[in-house]
Amino acid sequence: MGKLVRKNWVSAGLLAAGLWAALGWTGMGSIACVPAHAQQPAPAQPVVDELVLHDTIQPVSADEVTRALDRANSDGAHALLIELDTPGGLLDSMRTMVGAILRSRVPVIVYVAPSGSRAGSAGFFLLESADVAAMAPGTEAGAAHVVFEGGKPDDVEVQKVENDAEAFMRSYVTKRGRSADAAQEAEKSSHSYTADEALNLHLIDLIANSDADLLKALDGRTVTRMDGSTSTLHVAGARIVPIQLTLRDQLLGWLVNPNIALLLLVGGALLIYLEFNAPGTIVPGALGTLMVLLAVFALDLLPIRYTAVLLLLAAIVLLILEAKVGGHGALAIAGILCLTFGTLTLVAAPVPEMGVSPWVAVSVSVAFGAITVFLVRLVVRAQKRKARIGPDAMVGSSATAMEALAPQGHVLVEGEIWEAVANAPVTAGTRLRVVGHDQLLLQVESEVQQVGKSAS
Image 1: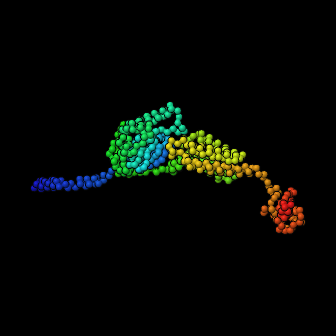
Image 2: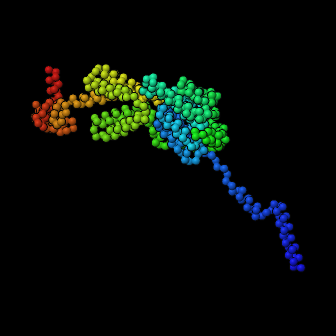
Image 3: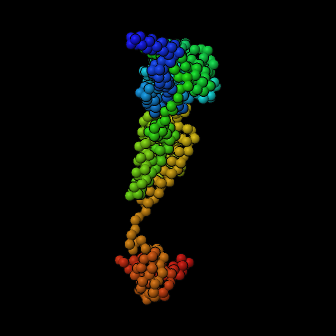
């Protein structure tokens, strides 16, 4: 009887377990599955760093791109997006930027935007070096022919530099799968392309209206890196993180403007000159020294023509001679002309945007010339004027009798009380004139007597 009861209990248990499993009510299994499914992490939103480069190509902008690439390669960004608008710039700075882009582990997207922007001259090299080259509607790129700084050298040197630039562009354009012939046409003949023309000639990969459209179109695209490996972009809906310029970048970007550098140089020179003529004021000398040092630092980052520096030195000499010798204005005009030509040609700019503005050059030259002549003349006159102190300085001054002079008493001269002797008795309050002195005793006469002498 006991065995039968146990068998019935075992059979009932097995039947219940089977029904439970058939209905999908596996208690522990269900409890384990639901939390496991709920705790699966959602896919992380991709991040794309963005650098806005609306500037000329020079050492400061090269540093900005290098630092942006270092950040993108270290912060886990899926790509670096460079929004580009540049007229071009220096060849050495461009090579630095292109080299950093080619070495980047993170894919680099160069996007010429917004509409109306351009990737001219050195900017075209940057555009073609990117893993993805894109343009917004209404933009242009090209005109990448080498412009020589400081004048055109001989034919052999020209050919060497141009061939070197062509080979440099071919070295990565073909790796990117773009048209080397069309790219070399932009370099050889300074040809420029619209966005549509660049796309049809396989110079760029796509045209996009905005950053969001660009990333959406690139999602899932496979790009070939410089080492031959491939990488698939997953950037749809990516969070774009702008790279903000540091205070150092902003200051250097402001200083590297040749117009600012010229104003700092001229203003600093005038302040230092003022300090030399009024020693002990401290502030003009310190501020002027700081301005000149900042100007020299900024100009050191730019290509400078040394013939222009000689013109500036000649201008200063001519202006000083005008003030000291007196050239009836001829020396001053010659100095201002030298100053104008020197400032205009000071920076050997490969693009007009990197040169000194003609309006700034003329305004600074005329103002600096006039102020220099005026200040030097004041100094020359002060040096020629005999320094007089004590009784000598009183001769010729007006005086007032403080008491009756019969003939000696006290007089007030320029706020000072002196003992004086008159050539005739005078009453208190009489207006007198100092005509000489004997040691510290002034000799005075009535102004009425002075008038009578003049009339006679």
